[in-house]
Length: 99
Image (cartoon, rainbow, N blue to C red; front, side, top):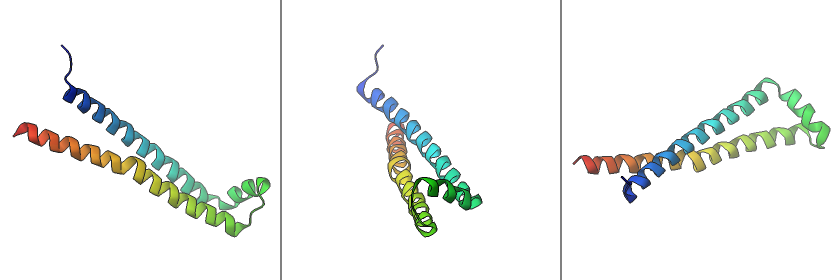
């Protein structure tokens, strides 16, 4: 017995939704780790980076602030919002099948 085209699309979309959700959670874990490291030990982080790069404390703070914001927006834009769209499409499709 072979799967029809609609069933293949449903399986693909469910798999894609799972991958997007896991990617979102992994990105969120990375973001929280970055934020916690920055809040707990900003001096250590600055010293580690000041060895490699000639930056001031103010520049370091700005890089971290904008970096955390950029990663947060990217995670939402590329992983969470597509996941929500796929889930809403699946629910609408299931609702049409049941009626």
